[in-house]
Amino acid sequence: MFSRRDRGRGGDGLEGVISFFGSHHALRAESVMKRAGFPVRLIPGPREISPNCGVALRFDYGLREEAISLLEASSVQFEAVHHYPER
Amino acid sequence: MIYLDNAATSWPKPRQVPRAVARAMTRGGGNPGRSGHSKSIEAGRAVLACRELLAELFNVRDPSRIVFTKNATEGLNVVLVGLLRAGGHVVTTSMEHNSVLRPLRALSSAGVALDVVAADAEGRVDPQEIRRAIGAGTRLVAVTHGSNVTGAVNDIAAIGAVCRERGVRLLVDAAQTVGCIPIDLERLPVDYLAFSGHKGLLGPQGTGGLYIRDEGDLPPLLRGGTGSLSDREEQPEFLPDRFESGTLNVPGIVGLGEGARYVLQRGVEMIMEHDRHLRDVLLEIVSGDPRIRVIGTSAGAPCTGLISVVIRDVSPSAAGEALERRFGILTRIGLHCAPSAHRSIGTFPDGTVRLSWSTFTTARQIAKAGRALLSIAAER
Image (cartoon, rainbow over all chains, first blue to last red; front, side, top):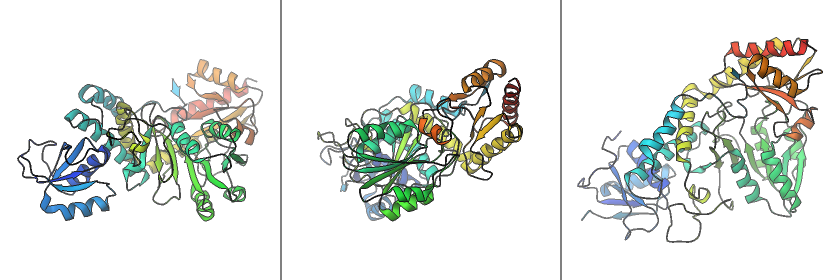
């Protein structure tokens, strides 16, 4: 399993953000994606992306198709996938 | 002291349970889903971990289909009160606990038609009787999985098949069976299953949950803050937030997770075998005595870890008092919040003496309880 610290400090080049309706789904996505070896990091949900949930999940935007398939196969609801580099 | 009231609440708990509860309050302490800071996220992860363990226990693919409640009663009320409306019809059984019968009696006064299918003298319900009670307007069948009075276990697969065939939803009360009898919700045709956390799952009191196969038109019992969709004044429709308003009992849920982990490691099949073995030990001792009537003892029939007995010429209350005072054995006497179940088995209004054990009870303790019953019976 991916062994990054639970909340990195950024600078990991993860340019994708997945937004969710509720935090259960964000945490479930983190759990499912980590188990599958995706580099992920929970962040406070950026307001300009979504007002829905307190947290969002940073991930490698290049792996978005694989990520979406995994989340759908694991019955994890998400709101949208965004290209949202850190600034 | 020998504690034989595990059907009311299990004791002792695995050591990890109280430790985890304390840790959730000392090292943890955040409010899950309310903020993006690390304490809130930690609390959210801990709640998710418990939900995932429960999903594993019930073989449910999507953990969000399990919502937390404060007990089985709350989960049962969500479905009964949420689904039933005046003019509709509901089928239940005479073996139900008051957690089902009291909401149904209230709904019946408000215009819901109610049919109560009678159980046999051991406390089992014939699925064909349920089939006969289902009509065109039937909205729900509500059935207990295991009786808290006799320990008899209903054939949920057969009852569920009848409900599917007639297009009626099935609510199961698994308060007595969770953690003691395998429950595979991928396989069983069950629409809603309410369970307690403080019995067979060995968690803290004040915990429980409800499995919801399809939330569809089921409204929540309570509405309020969820941390999600905070810009809107309407309740979120998705799971689990639709049914989890207000701050969750995080320490309790974390403890419940440790209880569930213990049950998974031990194995529900193993726990069931242990419970059955203790039942055999007890029956071996008391069944030769004509003064002791044991309720519900068909050999080989599935049952939970409890036995109800009546001692000739000794009231249950006198027997219960003697068991504690003279032998240090704690049991539950009376009607066990299930008056109609006692009518079914012919023990109303005095009730029975109920002895209920857990994975931590030993054969030696059960044998001592059996000999104590013999000695109380012999004194009359």
